[in-house]
Length: 592
Image (cartoon, rainbow, N blue to C red; front, side, top):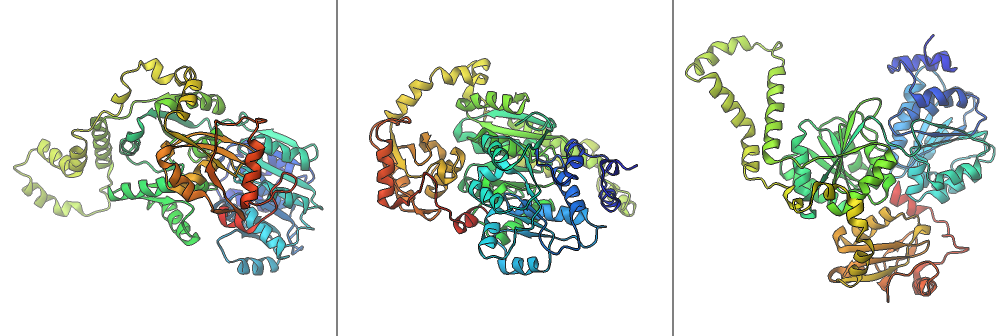
């Protein structure tokens, strides 16, 4: 008996798994499929990306569909258009032998008229991003009354992107559902709240430890001064010939800048960020999937939902501020049982984050020296020689040319031929790296233990550093945006840096609250920050940023309420009952 058949799947679906080369169910599939086939049990599945979650819910979902009913029976909600399309394509493959079952992807950036037309043809499964789904509901173009099964895929990602209100709205309007299936890589309190508020005694399955990372990933980090970060990145790429990877940056400005610099240096790389049109995104992703591009550089928002097989490396150009973001970044490699490497470039003051990450992903992080110029040349040289030796010469009529070749090289020794081949291939590397700086030297004044043990080194100065920043060229600014606007610290940081085109180094402490935020900016750039941010429109509200008086306020201190009042009376929009009024289109444009 086929291993998938033993789980209770019917013959047609088992045939599709065989066609796809599936031989053994993954752990999440093994545990989830028998439960989900009942159709009446609420379910929470915690597993990292790349563990086969789409098949874990897709295969039983297809078996539960009634092809005779030409209306949505199942709704799959996911964070991004890329993931939406990927899930739909997988479902099409899974139902290859199951006639009459159809799935339709609906997402922003594509023609909503065409999507509405396709829905009217009679679709059993709708795969949707939250913003476009809300738009269709408001246009009365989709009826959720007969939906029996709701799947929330990458639930933590959707909440991190600010879709909590949308998810609540969808779940409140699928009143006749029989079950909710929630899949997530991590289990933050917001995901737990959905399970508590909308699910009844859910069956919870965890593959690996909660919030842990993929055990097939080797985590490495490199300590570099801020001004050497780009050169460090370039060396890591050169030291790993044959790399097929994604580089993550905090801002779209960094992504575009690095992409342009590396492209000029001859690397096959393109950037993926929020300024690209859907057509441009599709072109970039098409080139990356076909491996016409060696590297993709992306912001966290732009890269969400990307699922590409065979990624060998993930590089964090900077460590993310939200620790859980690291799990999602690193999860792009080491998928489907393969091994992968996650490289992180960090400053000596950030090494305390490494300790936190080690605990979170339950894995050891290896501190490595930044390769020297000679190390890079040696690695490239032997990689080329291995390719030269393993080159297949059986398909060409090379013997025809051998006499001429032998005559041409009769006075050249074997050693000289090898030297000339090496010079032809590596001349540019040798010239670039012959006087290369030792990028590890900047840290030489501290002991090895001090360089690694950032907890002791930084925490002992934490209070003093925080105090000195306010007295050492920083201006404290107030902005009327907070967590109620769907922000986490990382997304807020990306927003203000993208809008102002400033670097992270100009920022000091960020103190984020429900309804507003205080942020330190060095005095030389405070005016530019205010000019760029103040008066912008965000989620149908006018953003207000201005200088704040005094130090950072703690919750309950006087001045916090006054800050809120002044922000909203200045035209910043109005919240009712402490919650933001529902708006759908702006979020659609921003995230889908």
